[in-house]
Length: 496
Ligand SMILES: *[C@@H]1O[C@H](CO)[C@@H](O)[C@H](O)[C@H]1NC(C)=O
Ligand SMILES: *[C@@H]1O[C@H](CO)[C@@H](O)[C@H](O)[C@H]1NC(C)=O
Ligand SMILES: *[C@@H]1O[C@H](CO)[C@@H](O)[C@H](O)[C@H]1NC(C)=O
Ligand SMILES: *[C@@H]1O[C@H](CO)[C@@H](O)[C@H](O)[C@H]1NC(C)=O
Ligand SMILES: *[C@@H]1O[C@H](CO)[C@@H](O)[C@H](O)[C@H]1NC(C)=O
Ligand SMILES: *[C@@H]1O[C@H](CO)[C@@H](O)[C@H](O)[C@H]1NC(C)=O
Ligand SMILES: *[C@@H]1O[C@H](CO)[C@@H](O)[C@H](O)[C@H]1NC(C)=O
Ligand SMILES: *[C@@H]1O[C@H](CO)[C@@H](O)[C@H](O)[C@H]1NC(C)=O
Image 1 (tube, rainbow, N blue to C red):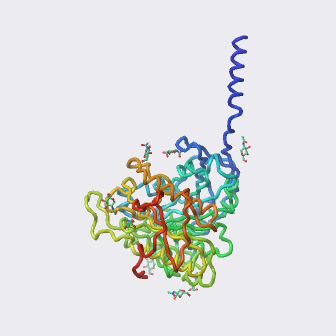
Image 2: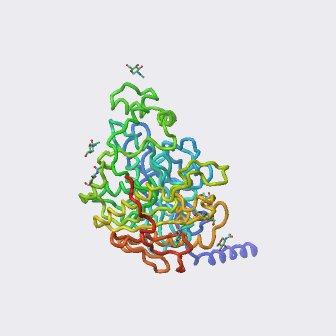
């Protein structure tokens, strides 16, 4: 009896000790596609995570190649593990990323049932509803998705508690950009739109502010968010754009032979366009994957890209801008000092730089950003520019890589120290500066972004063009960040 009593009082007192502490967060969240229970990973104890929530119906059967359909309410489920990424078209996997730096890539298992998103939210948010950064990964429309090791934002949110980051999968290559003559639809761009609409409806239940969401894309992801801005002049939902190391072509094709050519390979020959489309919807996806390789003369480059369907994208985007048919929102555009280095043939055993020596900037990417920013500013849209020239050996472990294509991503996501050893103090500082500017922009894209040193990122102007420079230790002020004259970074003409 006495023991029993002691035991009870022990129990009771440990309860009363626990009771005044902070309540554990409710990780079960209601959404339009069901009630999902997330989790907290001990490696980021102040971050709530939900992985693999469906934002669309699986795009299978007659939904293949077609606009995504809203997900129905699937009831109660866990959201504690990544879902498969969309089918990739990775070619021979001989690129520098595959051979040396796979952390930059999405490498989960692949499926046609892939339209899922992932949400990371602060456990102790600095405000009631935090802004939302929606990440659109690159990969040349043939690779990419919502889960690359360097693109997991948990440490960024753990440190700042200021924002939510969302990543998502969208359809790629023939599945996302089929260009069928019977249905000229950029399904992958519509996937992006549906994900944004899903977030508008649901993000408040995760502590996000649906009225303060921005799109952030890199490489072809930048291309996607720019196209988005031209496709949704009236109702963009988001409030700003950050885009790096990519751009939209000056002129987009209105048709492509690739879908038809692939149809010949998989037994869908000699059909009308509509019959061909239906036939192609019934082919096993692995045969389609193979057909795309068969018809592609250059496996390092994808064949299937956006076609001007006059809904999701248009032949001449400059014309859209001139007619005011663009979401009039602020844009941050940036590029890497040494963009070109990753696109040269890569020999993992070589100890010296490939020849020709990497061209800093890879003109096309520098130009695309410069032209986009210039023309936006000329039409009265606010824009900002940056250059990243970091050269950090754990994220770019060859002396000739330096600030290569994609290399600012691990600094912004705060993942730079996760492989190949710890980072330098300067690298951490550069990472923090960039994170702070990105969040500041998400908090209010209508105000020039600032960092914790209260430095203000000047608006880009054609009369006094300045770009923010990140990653250059020779910049003398304490943050090692400063606006520099654009002439230092771009003087040559753009070729296209
Ligand atoms: C957590 O939130 C969900 C969705 O709003 C609700 O159904 C559930 O009852 C909550 N659980 C607790 C323990 O409060
Ligand atoms: C938790 O975080 C660690 C380190 O980032 C990672 O390796 C692990 O996969 C994460 N767990 C889950 C369930 O995501
Ligand atoms: C398509 O038509 C050509 C010419 O009539 C014929 O040679 C070929 O066998 C046909 N292919 C299929 C798959 O029916
Ligand atoms: C889109 O518009 C262009 C020119 O404005 C036209 O050539 C093209 O056929 C149109 N495409 C579709 C799918 O309507
Ligand atoms: C695209 O449109 C712009 C603005 O109308 C025009 O100046 C330009 O010549 C067009 N480009 C092409 C290649 O037609
Ligand atoms: C990167 O830094 C290393 C070591 O300091 C240097 O040898 C190399 O030239 C730099 N690379 C670039 C591309 O700037
Ligand atoms: C990593 O490096 C930073 C700065 O260079 C240092 O402050 C930190 O303690 C290091 N972390 C580990 C685990 O060594
Ligand atoms: C770093 O800044 C200095 C001083 O402005 C400049 O001379 C140098 O070219 C920059 N380095 C890189 C790699 O951009």
